[in-house]
Image 1 (tube, one colour):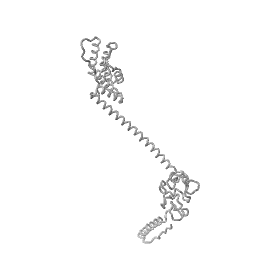
Image 2: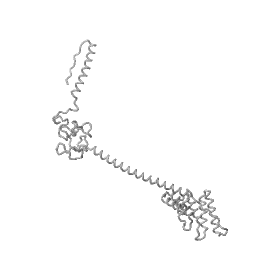
Image 3: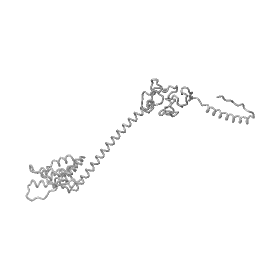
Image 4: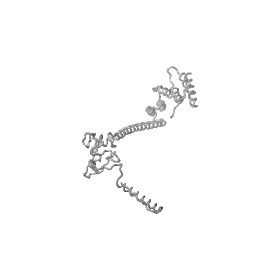
Length: 308
């Protein structure tokens, strides 16, 4: 971004000694500035201002002093120096370059809104200044990027807030699902469901005054809910597919005989079919053993009978 120095215009020879000293210090300051000696240029511009008559102003010395501050990254000093310049007697061109540099100082201070205002003021005084127009466009793009970033941050905050809320809700649901007051493996939330799937804490299948979620045998058929629930208590078993799970169904296989009157297999007892299969296998092994022994001893071995 451009920082414009003001150079002394040619004057007539009839000038006072004060004016001569002022111009000399300004020229010295400009030379130091062009050589990159910004501290030395600051000193020279201050000398120029010190050699002014009482009540006299020097736009060149005041303006260039602000530039010297800016180059030293003394942005507050530069800003205050530029803002202290009285603009009443300035030409439009002088107002334009002053507002341009004030805009640059605002940008250095990360104050984009006021920088945009200053660049616009500069262009009102000098609409043909392409560099100020470029700075204005750059500042407006930065402003748009800043707004987009803030909007994205707000959206991210809202998304994070929604995620946290969903996480809390999911955790609550999981906690509810984990609750099992009667220890039958079926979650309380499932046992509180009525036939329509709605939550009803007073759901009491056997009408014994104890709600299902607190009753280990909800249908009072003598078979614990834990046994009738099946392999997946979260979705209790429904043998006859009538929509009523076995733990609430007094005739779970719909054979006309109440579950309480049917003999339920002992899960720890081996079935008759499995026992026969084992017996057959043992008999085969025994037969093979006898044949081997007959070959070795030349006589038969009495078979062993198994009773199951």
